[in-house]
Image 1 (cartoon, helix red, strand yellow):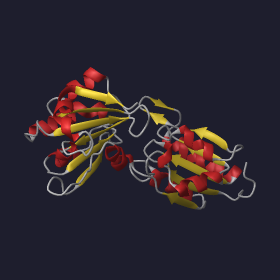
Image 2 (cartoon, rainbow, N blue to C red):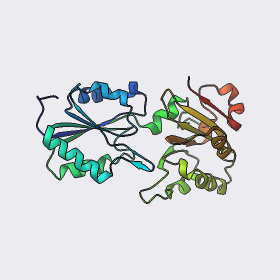
Image 3 (cartoon, rainbow, N blue to C red):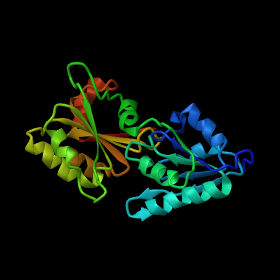
Length: 261
């Protein structure tokens, strides 16, 4: 354990989209000084190697139907460990402020007078499509993009999805696989059945899988290939314009999936 930093301090570090090589250098430096690391389910455990050997490593991941700790318990764990051991790194998948509840954690920590800092991470909402050659904006194709949570705190589909379906923007939906049928219906209601869709599971990881289809076919693609969470849904013409493998995109568009080797 790092005995040079026993004064309470918490650093929220964005772990990036999954590939450990996409952790920032600043994040590596913060981990190297940690006495305690609290990490979540979307943080690649390989990243923990950057923490000192004697640093405590505490898993506080939350998956659908399998929460090791509630958010309130995680908040208290962060504070308790900071007061006991000093320098705490809270390692969060993607970026701490993109659907990561980082601001809630900081507000709670501040109420105890503990200094905090944030090291941004590469958000999966951008990096995962980019890793597949999907440019969320492209001149003449898409002028903007939405990034939306598929499931809100009350477990419902975000109302923003209906608004996004009316636009010409690229739509990126996180945590939306359990609401995929509802999402598809909203786009069909806007007569966008032929709009391309990509579903990217375990993005940037060695076990990444990608399914391609249209609004009208993607449910069958998901069923046929057992695609599931964690996955990112990308809807828009930019999927058709993806940089890699563009020559045989039409074949992939209907009912195909591939896994990275």
